[in-house]
Amino acid sequence: MSNFATPDLSDAHPDARHLEFQLRLFGQRERFAGPVSTIACHADNSRVAEAVAEPGAGRVYSWMAAAISADHCSVIG
Image (cartoon, rainbow, N blue to C red; front, side, top):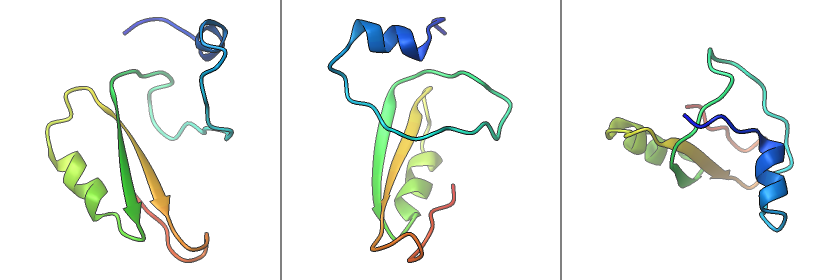
């Protein structure tokens, strides 16, 4: 894995879009990298389950859980 930091990426790509939220560490790894696969799901995590059932090949999954409101549903992976 390459040794890089987010500020380095931001400096190298000033026009790149990024998400504004804080990440919290719940696992053993503080850093990871790989090709990103985005999964869009609406009030249902079956597409997430389908994706993680396939060989990952080092992918990093990012899913967008579109719901009417935050109290409408949750997606647990």
